Image (tube, rainbow, N blue to C red; front, side):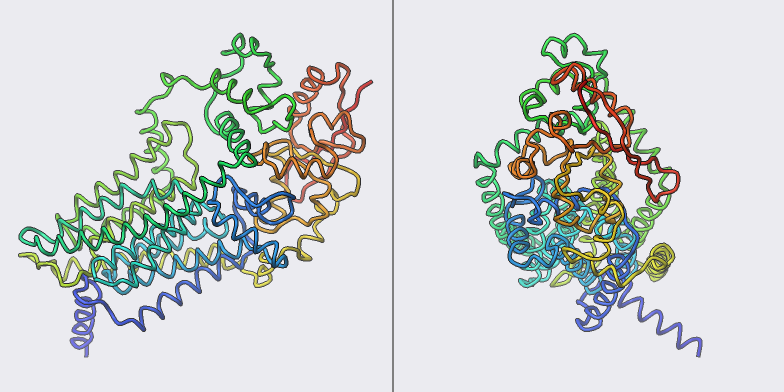
Length: 594
């Protein structure tokens, strides 16, 4: 009996554990990929837990129709923006940004799972699926970040394209082209970031064919060029449309303003004392500089794109102050302090090396080493957010996977094929790692699973309407100007995914953020009667500043004295407690002049 079991296990490992000579049956692979997708997406989407940052909620609000004169967003492609905006206008009951984003994540994850289960070795497939399910999917759903969504779509799409090229499967290339184009429309720069990994994957594929395969290499290159042209036409069309839209004067001013703004708030800058004389020469005081550096720029009469660019050029941190070795050490320390991520990447590398040995050693080292180098470079420039870091590590999986996908006709067999012991070890690592990821998902997020969170796809819901903060700051005729960093507290109440009601937006504007300088914010502010939010704090009755930062109140008072009223004073008229234990209350501030 035991001999029969061992024989069955060995036979299974020979079929599933090694690089498959023939693609596995469709039906079981589709069923397994569907089950995995249903489990992971279901647990993470229908959940009371939430994560930052708030990028996607901001984009969702901009494209929701809550702003007049909207329809575009700085970070996503104009084609995608137009589709989402028009659907929000035509069918206003749903939050179409979230619907389309979740659908893109679902399709990309299913495609990723299906390709690996059908065309890659068991151990490596499960290790990569486990990595994506635990580390990436949570950032696409609970974290709801469009950059990671773009990376998942692009990796799944490029994997489909590579598999289709290798197996002469046009349908797989078509699916891959659509996914890559969709990923590009979510975040164009992610496609550029993926290019070195795709080139490495293709180079590894050519090495895999070996010498004396000139005809096969030629045919493979031709198919790859055809697929690349198809992707290029789709991506190029979306890019051309995007460029045409942003060339319109209506949107060009916003783009110029954002280019000037983000350098000041997103990258290291000198302290005011270090550049005091230069800034003073252009009339920028210490309070002016503090506000610009702290997301408070809603004064279109003074804080213009030209001024922001001039300040940025003066205050930019000198290149000499940066250190590449320091960035290298910082990334190394980060990986040491992130053992789950580091061990997970090691498991993926081990599964690949056990199956490919020397043949894939260079691919694995160059791919993971390239991802590490990219992270070091981002740290060197002064900015490596988690969404970029995890997207980079996800992209690094592509060359490791392409090295083992089914190729038709089969590649030449190595003189010393991989032994059953290595296959078993790889499969064991992959299965155990995938099980641990599944257990981690259940333990971490199953307790907060809630079917009622299907209401996140609705434009309005009782969950939002009944929220205490929403009700407190919804008051007809009164305008609350929110400190941009403080508005995060309300976004947490909305779980970073629910849209605020239109009645709330009628009493709300912001001190800054990436929407400043846009036609939609200008139209919104004019509609609620406060075209200049900072000046309106002292000129307009029933206008209040909402913040948690006492320093912001002090700096804003100095700013108002310097620009609009020498006698400006501030008074905290209300303190709104937060449900979060130990959190500072929201301060409602009235500015006035004696």
